Image (cartoon, rainbow, N blue to C red):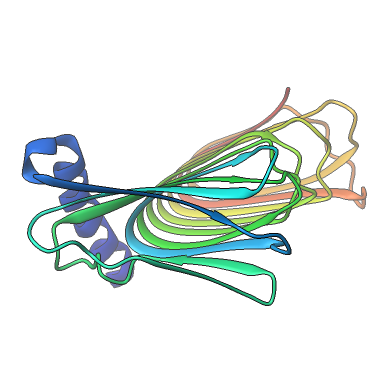
Length: 225
């Protein structure tokens, strides 16, 4: 509970900043490309908006950093096939926000561990492992066979264009919506302590394609595409 309260305070402050551009007077933009051999993108940070899209050609990254005062330090490196993006210079005690737009081959996996912000993916078939303290997670045209999404405070919207093997979503407070192709069959498990639980997809126990959604307070919707 203490962690959730701290996250709520953090995202409230960041929401105020992001809603008033004049509070962040300075902006720096970077663009760079990354060589081959990358199978995973890993992103960490305090106040981050992450947008990962499937595309052709080399992996490319666009950074937009909004801040006051000194330019917050960001960094990237490739090691063992993992492209790591970090914004250690943009912490909770500094007025700043980092936006990444990353273009990758569709098969690249995405790992994210963010305190607050947004995570958005489009057209990816690689594994998704996403943790967000507060904000929103959205997956458009998802092709990933495996997804593990954890949000403390915020909403999750996963829209699948191909049948997944395993989907696991947990949220302490928020609305979770999972839209699935009709082929299935799916073994759907949901649990909500307080709120509305709507499952419109037939559940077949033991089916090869498993969907598990758990929310403490909020709303769950699992529906066909």
